Image: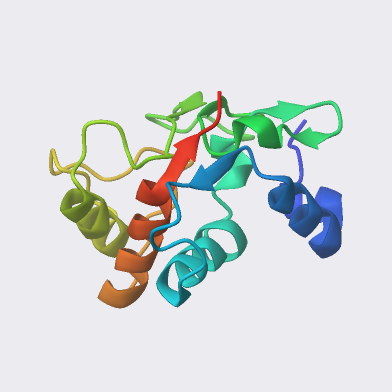
Length: 146
């Protein structure tokens, strides 16, 4: 059975409340609440819907104490999809092993540092440079609260 997107299950206010509970916080006070980080947060959480795949799901929705810290994908394609990835990597703190510049390029092109397209179900984002930098800065600013 194909599961509807999280935003459909929770509705706009439920998703906003779930995201607001957050298990990750910007590192230190430097930059927290700045327009660039707020714009990056908005894009990652409301446009990119990163939480749908990169945050574990519990019986009542996303487990926000593990916000963007990697998760098993809770939906499957209805037909076979080559290279489907079953586990989304952690992105709180940035993509593991990638520089900020590599993350920006990935968000602009959908191509990873190895020259390969993102594996499904990861969308092939085509953010403009300013938006890609804002998302990268937001993700890098998150420090998981274990």
